[in-house]
Amino acid sequence: DAKTTQPTSMDCAEGRAANLPCNHSTISGNEYVYWYRQIHSQGPQYIIHGLKNNETNEMASLIITEDRKSSTLILPHATLRDTAVYYCIVSGTLQGGKLIFGQGTELSVKP
Amino acid sequence: EAQVTQNPRYLITVTGKKLTVTCSQNMNHEYMSWYRQDPGLGLRQIYYSMNVEVTDKGDVPEGYKVSRKEKRNFPLILESPSPNQTSLYFCASSLGRGDGNTIYFGEGSWLTVV
Image (tube, rainbow over all chains, first blue to last red; front, side, top):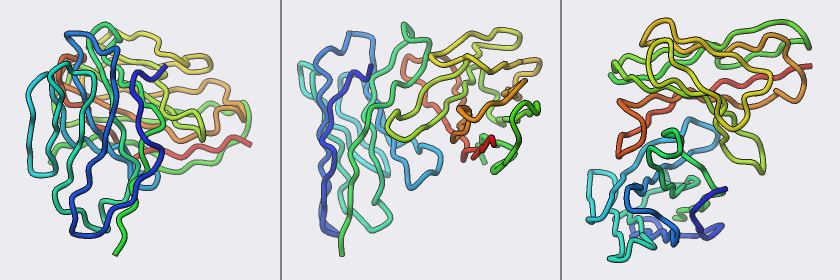
């Protein structure tokens, strides 16, 4: 079973920041939070991951709460090409390294 | 360029006709795995491999075989395909198992069994 809870869908205006929330209240100490996205039926694309600290890369920022029970993915300036399903996933060695994908959030970026 | 390459990308086959979906990665990754994606069920892991000659079942291994004779290749074998194996398949690889390693996915292989 997926260990994360995400809203089913969200809208965002082009050029604005998209903030995608994720709850992972049962996360254990050695599990990372990963974010992937899938555009149509293409292969899932890695966005970012983190353990405890906030992370930023060229695509996005990841904000993890201090208790690690939730996180937020931030796309600072969403474009139409960011329209996709976004998956928040927790993973660690105890699960054989697999990613357990939930249903994700369908983000629609609108002009 | 770092890549996970799957072939074929699209295939229609008949029930019972053995087929192989190849997967190759050029990143010298130790860990590779196969997923299938079905509407309403999300992505589910079929098999994974920790290294050469080391493979293990994932969540939905029935009807599939894999092999890992070389580090870069991890083919998925359907010995006797059935219509319930019609699905979108993804191969994935990473440097190691979990623990913060980035997992890279191939572009997918659409398989239809009639």
